[in-house]
Image (cartoon, rainbow, N blue to C red; front, side, top):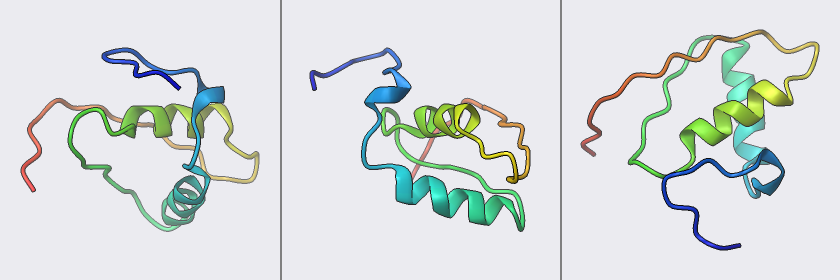
Length: 72
C-alpha cells in the first residue's frame, strides 16, 4: 500500500485494527472514551470504520472531534 499523506483511506483498506475496534466497543458498552495519539495514526479512520460497521446490538455513539495538541 502506498503512503497517503493528508487524505483518508478507503475503509476497505484498513488492516490490523479489528482487535482494537473490538476492545473499543467493549469499553463503549460501559463508559465513554477518548482516543489520543499523535497525528496521522488512524484515529479518525478507526472511528469512521466503527460507524460504518456498527453491529445492531452495539450501543450507538456520537464521535466528537476537537483539535488540540498531543504531548506524551
